[in-house]
Image 1 (cartoon, rainbow, N blue to C red):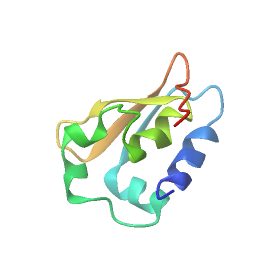
Image 2 (image 1 turned 180 degrees about the vertical axis):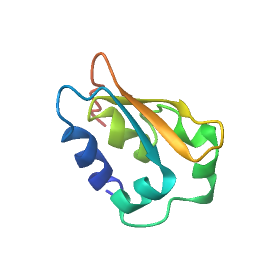
Image 3 (image 1 turned 60 degrees about the vertical axis):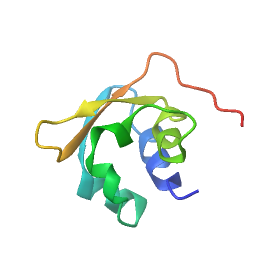
Image 4 (image 1 turned 90 degrees about the vertical axis):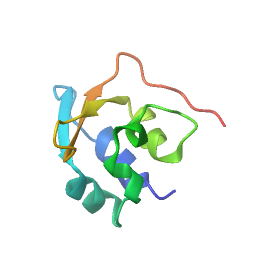
Length: 87
């Protein structure tokens, strides 16, 4: 899975951390390769369990709250209940 390191990053966050802002560069560093070009658009960051990249944060119990005004950072929040993905 291309985004396994991103999933591990979210899963490893201490219980007291419930909000994170990561730049696209930081996320690329975690993934270990450049993100696709469309990752510069908010629609790529939808919490869609059918998309492999979204599963990285959803299965770890996080959701994307949004992208900042400049499109340089993604805001993640700990979800109330982690999504369980079986397929």
